[in-house]
Length: 154
Image (cartoon, rainbow, N blue to C red):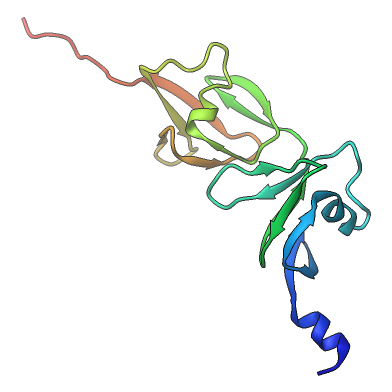
């Protein structure tokens, strides 16, 4: 095996902002990850680890991370606007739990109210606290009493 083949054999593929990069597996300083991207990630932007079906993790610029094949990273993203009960909120995350969505309004959505995702032309979906919601520009949510008491018989 040639020297270049041997050096490539130990490499894995990661993605930063959708672009593939071949690097060696194992611990790497976050600063080195930031420098991989062309152009490098600017100092005023954050670098995030994209974790599937969980909250993404912001990386400490002075820290290190143990990289494995297929990991995906992205730089700080622009805000998107979502609505809860017709009030607009700018968010910088593309995935949030139902519990975190409930904390956007001030005060938080009360525990006795349910959070629903308004889906045009389809049945609305109740958002549980543990649900991971993949957010997109313009998504709408509303709250409703968690329990409707129709009253008592006479």
